[in-house]
Structures are given as C-alpha cells and as structure tokens.
Image (cartoon, rainbow, N blue to C red; front, side, top):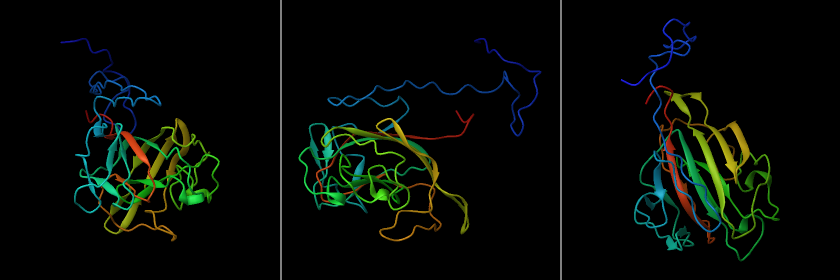
Length: 248
C-alpha cells in the first residue's frame, strides 16, 4: 500500500469526524485541469466536468419546455436564431461550477437593453444578464453580469462587441423544509476573470419588472440560454456539480 502520511493521536476537528491531519481521512479525487481560452480558440474543460457544448452539436439542449432547439451552429459556436425560442439543458443541475463563454454581435445595433441581449438562467429561474455593455448605458441591475433585477455587477468588466467574454459561476441553490426557506440561493460570479458577485445571497428567482420572492422549488433545474432576438453566440460551456468534503 502507498504511504499515507498523517496522524492518529491529534485532536478531533470540532464538529467533524476526523482528527487534525488524520491519517484515515479519504483523499480527494484527482482532476486534470482544463486549458484557458483565447479569442481565437476555446479552452478545454476539467476532466470531471460535464460538457454542455463543445462546438459540434446541440445534443445536450432542447427548446425550453421541450422540442428541438432552433439555434444555429456557426464556426464552433451556437448562435441565437432570433424568435426561435430560448433553450435549456436536458439534464438538470443544482449546486455547481459553471463556465460559459459568449459574444455579442460585432456589428453594433441598438442601445440600452436592445443591444446584444440574452441571458444565462441557473436552475431555469435565476438570470445572469448577457448584454453588450461596452460604452452602453442601461439600468444598473440590467448590466452584463447583473443578477437581473436584483444586483448590479460590482464592476463593469465588459469587452468590446464581438469579442469573446466568459462567466465563471459558483452556484448554491436554495433549500426548503416544506414551505420554509432554510437557505437562500447564493452566487459568486467572475466576468472575464473579475469578481462581480461575491457570495451574494439572492432574494428569489428572477421576475420581470417585479420584486423577487421565494416559493418552494426542486433542488435541481436546467441551465437556460435566452432568445431575446439578438445574434448572441455561446461556446465552451461546461459544468461541474459540486459535492461536499470527503464525498469522493
């Protein structure tokens, strides 16, 4: 057997079944990190990630509510087919790490919310705004990276129109006991590598022009992408369902 350095005579960690530096504590799984993306080429996901889109097909996706997605494959990306309908993953997820890259149209049309508008929905209910916000003024809680209608991004980290941008999300869904909320949803979000939400507790699912509030919901839901009528592209989408410590 391989040598397992550790101790058997150290004190117990408060509230945990292991000692400090416990020789019997299980080792975490080994994961091969992915590679970083460039403007010309998407990176690769970690070895334990679920690939939701690698540029070759839309097999992991369906039209929201069911049916074939109407979006297009263009140069290794998926592009919104305006007014064909939003799409969502067939598989449902709860607590997770999500990576997604997107680009607004390089040809600028419109302003405010009418410029490169789309959205990423966590559990099908909580929207991260996608919008061309490079020198484009709109209401603060509708900026790119905003938790739409609740929290503006801490900073505007938008790149120029047509350039690839990234969201890296750490997500904890809400928990309920019966009708009682026991843990609100919480999100940490990096936009182009910059923290724009830091363990932010949400007030409830996204609601259009209305105050959010919680109602009991499942612990898992789809990842959704919005058709808002603009030619927004997405690429290199992967997700890692998050487990607790010592779960292997």
